[in-house]
Length: 200
Ligand SMILES: Cc1cc2nc3c(=O)[nH]c(=O)nc-3n(C[C@H](O)[C@H](O)[C@H](O)COP(=O)(O)O)c2cc1C
Image 1 (tube, rainbow, N blue to C red):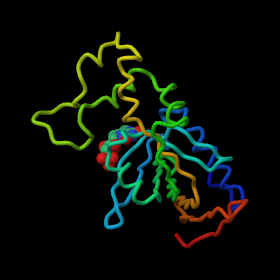
Image 2 (image 1 turned 135 degrees about the vertical axis):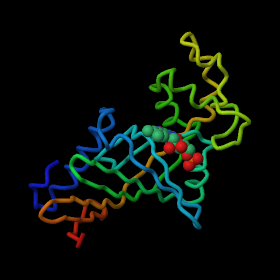
Image 3 (image 1 turned 90 degrees about the horizontal axis):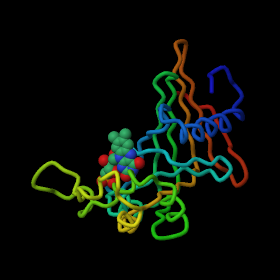
């Protein structure tokens, strides 16, 4: 996406093309957004990997340990916030999205099936993320880190595997420029993105 465009209607498709491309491009800065959640009193943010983006469904998704704070917060308040920044293009996206936690269902199973064994072990910690431990470590049994580990041995991790699927309702786009910055907001209005230019 370049800043050459001044047509508001061209931006949402271009934004979604970038998000969809990022899921398959480890080098894309949009591959590692910040996901914000809230417990209604305070917000909490963390970097995640963007695993799925679908313009037609307005969906973004990442994976998490189901015992993590972000999951507890999303169960309390389903509105999540995603922050993307591309420093090379000086482009920021702020995304608000209704976010559902998928655990032990068809969506979780489909994503688990395509998660490499080397990553499935990340859901096998014997204590929840954020638990205090007596020495540095990840609470994952060393045997599960063997290159010979099997899918069956890692299957207990499935219980802890959650897919966080966001349905986007607002995208705010900010493009920094040497001669001036440009900002726009897009709200999903039943059948289409409705955009407005904003003062940056
Ligand atoms: C580059 C990077 C990518 C990360 N990707 C994820 C991810 O996809 N899912 C995840 O749950 N945590 C991911 N983390 C760890 C989170 O930032 C965070 O530390 C962890 O999820 C615990 O957050 P919570 O306790 O607020 O839920 C990533 C961290 C970094 C630095």
